Image (cartoon, rainbow, N blue to C red; front, side, top):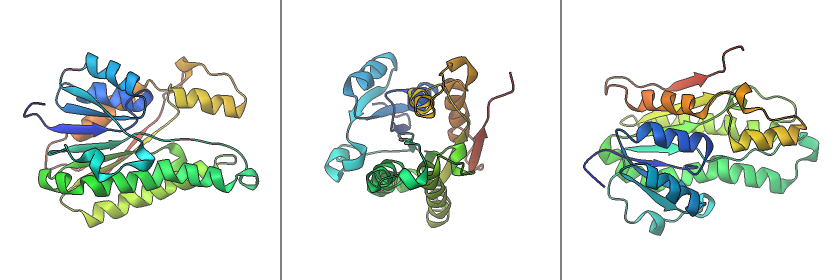
Length: 225
């Protein structure tokens, strides 16, 4: 690592997380968080100042973060989406969804708050359009994203020295979107969705905003084609 600011990006092995890492690489040293060590290592090899930081987000402990002496930016990009009517949603689905999308976010944030406070840092939470509007079949996922939105809003008030940004991307061409389309019983055509790089650049614009500016929310939607 250099003396550049340090960013930890979860879910960095693919999709939006990977795109955010690429967008921050010119200005930040990167810790690429996730469980797929092979994919993280491959991405790290492409980005100067990046290193794989494999860990299980739902079972992270202070020991996993012990070597982390400095942290300027924390990007929460990891997430899961399991669709279906609420009447058919098992408690296991509810628990898995909230474990990844909410509880793990809160736990990891708490573990690195000392470093973020020392840096007057920035926390970015990748939310979803489902965190603003709940549609049929999306109830469990939407509930987790509404909770994530509430968490971000409360954190912003609790930690006034930090910048906290909620990002609401529309449908984006990622492996998660491909799985969502499978669950919906539809075809997956990447060209019909937002390029992950576009979300990555939007996140970078918030992170790189001048210190007097606090971008609290970003909504990214696809243009009509």
